Length: 271
Image 1 (cartoon, rainbow, N blue to C red):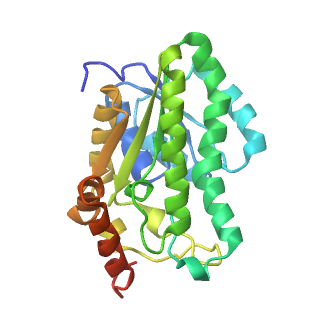
Image 2: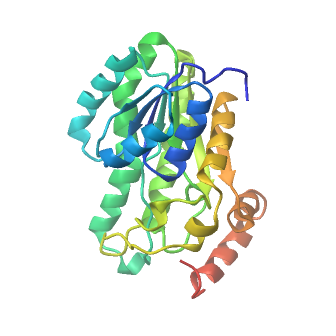
């Protein structure tokens, strides 16, 4: 990691109350970042802030899908230290349902949380970054943003949208010296699996083999911190070969991925 990159960086993390967001906050606090922590539950954010010890941190509870509330949240975030150096749009939710069983409303909900919410945050923060000609935007994507995954059609669609948006954003903001990174994440321990939506749009409330046996969030946070500090356009945080292998196969043998995923879709053990 470039020396002292994170020292003093005002970094706003959404979805900071658990999983990847909490792991990243823990790592950045160790490197001297000043953190703005957002999620829906204030009590969990306060727990994370206490865990960070002496690190400078502002707790800013919010629901990322409340688009009307974002301008006020941005104003509060900017007033804390006068700037936002890094915006990490990490909040999101997954899905566990077949295409034909899933309601249109559930697809809309997945897009609102995983695509429109980060886009709204980015648009609200960009004017201040462009005025300073400095900043870094980081958005959590997934291997599901690189290849479609059975039982996650709406989630995959939203993450593909994130990938396309960030690729274009990166090109357009180069002239403003603002960097954009997407996080290609899979198999990290988190509560996201329990919060994944069913066909009707309700959380599953169930554990998952991915969420229970994946990479520790702090380890993921170290990989993210290092990749962002290096200015990588995409930062891969994928622990298990089952998720990583199709990334390579998609580039070299696209048809093989189709066959693999079709077989996976028929597996009774796949969730």
